[in-house]
Amino acid sequence: MSDFKMFRYDDGRLNDAIAIVGFPTVGLVGSIVTSYIVRELKMPILKGMSSDDISPYCILIDGEPYPPIRVHGLCRKEDGKDCSDLMVVTSEIAPNITQCYTLTNELLNMFRDYGVKKVICLEGIPRYCKDDVMYACGSTPEARTMIKSFGVEALETGMIKGLTGIMLFEGKERDMDIVTLLCPADPKLPDPRAAAGVLDELAKVIPELKDMDTSPLVQEAEELDRRIRAQSESDAPPALPRDQHIYG
Image (cartoon, helix red, strand yellow):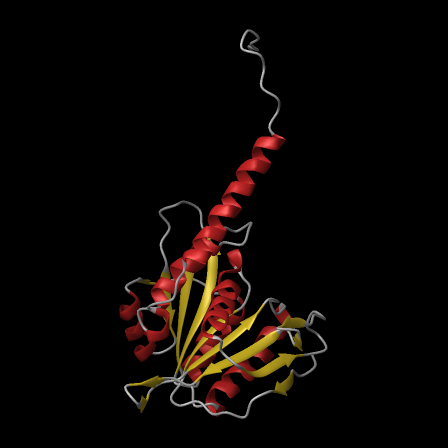
């Protein structure tokens, strides 16, 4: 497998940053959340990533071309004093199986270089009923303590696949605090409503997200529901006249 090529757009540094990582998995939750955060906070792009093995796409942002994996950063100020900064890794393209190990290594090395102390990975999981709840797991004791801040149930036994799973055990090896939020989502369609729920949880630990308006995501979900209902009704067989009935 070829190495990932790094594109640098900003030489700025981050201070004691927390990173959010979102790739497209079930319901595209990770991609929806991270792209929404980047857009709403107007986060500048720091770096981009691509490789010969990744799907050949260019992402246009305000007319500017960028590679499919982007890294955005935000220097935060609070009461005139420096506080923890924010990094967001986002992509509309999921890495394939053969890329996960190499990409994980690239990301963890980058986090180390930027002085990132904590990482939150977003992972969509299939929702089987409306009562399914969000879970979280962590790479270290400190990361598992962070889970309490979200108020979600800790996953004690299970299997996490793909990039997120590799980041957990590699984070443990590197003593890096990595938390994965596992969000139930529609396995067949993009799920902006589930993404809004994730943002509500992230707001508990990231100040900038506390006042972020998630209503556009909810409205998008409602519009998607309306279109699905309309399509379902258009595909339904024509109704019989009231005086005609079929038995058997």
